Image (cartoon, rainbow, N blue to C red; front, side, top):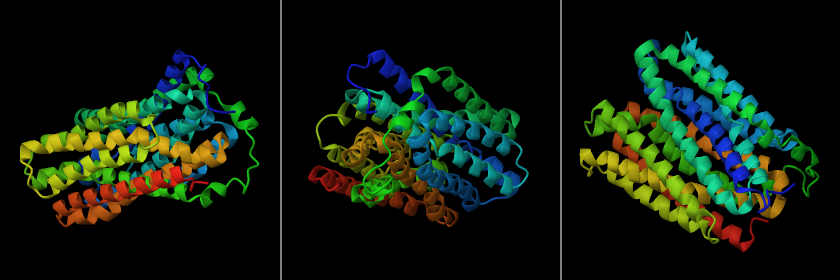
Length: 408
């Protein structure tokens, strides 16, 4: 079964895109279940930045490993079943967090959440590629990324508000309720998303076997691209507020606003990028241009030349550049998946390539947490700029190889 045909109604496409986007926003909500609670958790358990960062490393290592494997499960049993299972695990992680009595239990909550998070990219992109008309995929990927950014933005607001009024354990319960509500909503609309039959009838005997995609260089390049881009974001996700508080002398509220500006800018960039992603064959050039803007903003922040009042503005522009590249990035990955292996491999290729996201997020606290503890805040920001530059070079390589037929 191939991707939806152009005859598919706009209404059906829009509904599927909205439902998948909603699921993606839920997964991103749980990315930020723990980081906003760092001040409470550090005080409760006597932890350092490196230790609380380790919780997120556990989350993303489990998610990365699980994501690479989840793609095979999606191709075999259907995306909806796997998606609902993932949301159930996310809900459970909220309860584990709420009941944590030690650092070990905090790590257990991160592990359960990471396992739940692992299913979303292979399941989401399989549903979009199977259920949405090809000419609307650019907008579908845009909404998918946008909803993730909105999930990121919503999570700190809810988690901090609940923790401020009722304590950090209540925030874990609130996260659980968010997951349960999301799972119930998807099940209520399962008729539009059920692709189990499509998974069963897909031909699975492919040249080179189900692991043949691992021999395709452009697939690995896409993996590395995700690793660099999202590791840069992982630095900001975990440490932006304390960096700006310490290095620029901002209040905690204003420093946190810098991260909020990045997330909102990324959302705006993702929404805008969807209008350009499907146009032409040079998605790599669009990615490179957008990330160049982001890298220049990171350099401006790292030098300390930016005035304190400009931090929020530069973070917003950086987020816009990073977000704008998202839909074009996803179109590059789709081309790599379909050129050689067709729609039967959507799940496994998406699962492997997008596991680079989780590995990048897992690596960020390990690499930059010790630098934070040592007070080398400007070096952390220089690291963000270097990672974004490496991502630009990787994107250009992916685009060149794809157009030259090297993917096959």
